[in-house]
Each structure stands twice: as C-alpha cells, then as structure tokens.
Length: 511
Image (tube, rainbow, N blue to C red):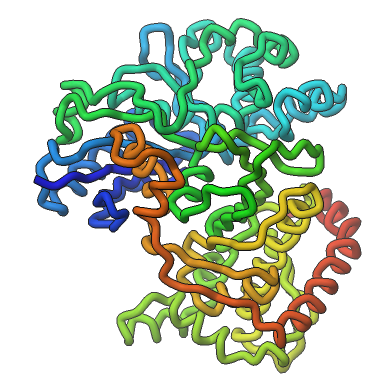
C-alpha cells in the first residue's frame, strides 16, 4: 500500500488538486475553473459554495486518475490566494460571496487612511503597505456600507481557510496567510486590539481565526467532507499557507539567501531572510512557513499575463502554426523570440497592462517602434520588459537588505528556456527551474508531509522531495546589452510619469 500527499491550491480563477508521492513526484493534477462575478465596477467575487464544489470535483478527479485508494493519502495541505476575505456568519454559513484579492471596492477606505497617515501608525506592527483587497479595509467597508452583514460576521477567513473549514469543520488560519493581511502584529506573531481599533473595526477581534503553523495538523476530514470529496474520513489536514510561501517551498526555497521568482499572473519576487526586513519601501515582510525565518516580498501585476494578452490579440499566425504542429502557441512564441538576436533588439516595453510597480496611473507601452520592426521584435521587447519589471523589484529587495545569490524560477514563464535565460543574464544570478508545474500545491503537500510525520522539517522535506530540471548561468556577453536597455526602461518610467497622470484623467467623449 502506497503513501501519498495531497496538495490543494486555490488561486483567483482555478481550484487545483495535485497528488504527490513521498519523493515529490507529481503523479496527477486536476483542476476546476471557479467563476468570478463582477457585480459592480471594481468588485471581484465568487460563490463560496462554488469554490468548495470546484475543490471537491478536483479532488475526486485526481484520486480517480491516480487509481489509488483514498486511505493511501496520509496528509492534506492547502494553499490559496492571499487577502480578499471569505466571511462566515455566526451560524458558520457564508455571510457574503468570497471577495478576491483583485477587489478594489475599499479604495476610498484606504485613500482615507492614507490621508491621515494611518499606515505610519500601523506599519511597526504590520511591516507592509495597505491596499484595498486586504481584510482590514474590506471589513471597514462592510461596516460602512453593509452594516447588517457586518453585524452577522462570525469568522474572518481567507481563501484556503474556507477550504480547510469545509474539510474539517475547524475555524482556523495560519501565520503565513494572516501575516499578509495587516490584521496580525507580525513581529509579535499575534492579533492586536490596538490595530483593530486603529481600523475602526474593534468588534472583529473575536471573529479572527486562531492561527496555526503551516505544518500543524488542525483537524481531520469529516464524514460529510469525505462523502463530498471521496477522501477517507479522518485524514489529517494541516494549517496550510499563503500561496507565495507554498510556491517558494514547492520550488525548494527554504533558506536565507535564496529567492523564488514567480513569472505568472503577478510578478512575485520573494527572499527568505533570517531577520525581518523592516522597510516602508518594500511591498511586505511576512512570517515564513518555517517559523525560524521571514519572507520579504516585492510584487506587482506586471508579469506573464502581458504575454497572454499579446498572444490573444496579435498572434493568429503563431496560433495556426502551433495547431499545425500540435504544440502550445507559447512554444512557438519562444522560438520566435529566440530567433531575434539580442544585439538587434532596440525596443522597450513597459508591462503595465494590469497594474504597475511605479505609479497607479502607469499603462503599458512599446517605445521606439519603427516601420521595419516585426511582431517578433515586439514579442522580444515584451519578454524583456517583464524581466525588467522583476529586476526593478529585485533591486528594491537587495537595497533593503534582502540579498540573494540563487533564484528558483517558477510559474508559467519558467517553461520558456529563452525567457529563463533572460532572467539569468539580467539579474546576474544562477537560475534554477524546479521539477513539476504545480509548485503551490507541492508546497502545500510538503507541509502536510511534515504534519503527517513523513518529514522532520522543511529543509529535510525539500532535500527529499524537490529536484531541479534546468539550470541557467548568466551569459556575461549579453548582460551589458540587457542592462543598457534596462537603463532606458527606467528613463522612460520617469519621462512618462506626468503623461500617464494626464491620460488617466482624460474624458472620453462619445458621439
């Protein structure tokens, strides 16, 4: 009879279940898309019941595809998108739709807090910036705009906490996820009545879930959850973790001086440190899954989704070629980019289609386009622009003291060898690509393995269960070329600052 670990990963669009053996081999993966609703501009919600149904469907499918007995799964770990909020009422039922991490309904709340410098008062406790999708701002929004719902709130959960609640009936969270919400006093690893009063939501102190370590068993699969998922009743479930922690661990990043870069929907750049990095210029410092360490994060929505947009809008020929050959259109794009010599590239791209790490009004743009340029030149510029945005984050991390000498690259962009080599050449560090695509689910499964007693700690776990499939060393001949274009990239950021502000306030006239 075999032994397996189940990792669950719920992002903003898809519920995934991945099954691993104890050596970290990814055996089967199943997923379900969970619909997002946009009831009003800036609102991003999903049905909490649909989220659970998507997860149960993925679990059932992955067990069936693997052909194993449910009893052979010795532990379950869950990761999920950070922030947003998933509220339960006092009877333990959903009090509202789940609110996702891209929601902006609380923008005015945060703007008001910034006007009175509330962040300066909170920062010594939270070690992070405010933004509208954090639970503190969303709870303040409910108190102001939906007081009847606010009165009924019994538990303030995050995405993966709701899944754990459905599995075990336990209302819990974990330290990594809660340390990114501005609800936790991060240096002291506890909730703070002072913080809750600062946000004007002191009533919510009693609704905050007790945090666990990511590898700590918080409960067992109930009979009801077993019937819904096909899991064996009694299977242990651990506290789980923030998806960025899960991706780092799934990639094998567990020690100070190691970095994980995720080239996906967001540009995630994170470094494990022995001591907390306290800097108002950094996106956030959080508690790491290994309680001895900390995680310093720089992030923005400036990564591989730019390529997805470009492919959808402009790459009909590449799609036809991909269909003819039976390969991914992105594989064809990689070949196109690789065939444009580094020396011949002269275009700059700002990857700000969905957000920016420089100013709120910034937008994407190609610069220096001439009539002789082709779609291939634009594609190469896009690849490079995404790398430069990551480099901008990496520079901030290093300047704040979160230095690193090795990077594990994950996310959809890590499948591209030409893109991965650009990262190595531009960041001037060794880039390693771990095996398997579901690093978030893998990190969650590894945490479950520690809770089940399979591994002693994260260091031992990644030694046994994480392997590297590709290594990219910096090419010193190319580095000066990339860095010269990066300087132009930054000059254009400054030059476009005022035009971006003016464009954001242009009125659109219709006839």
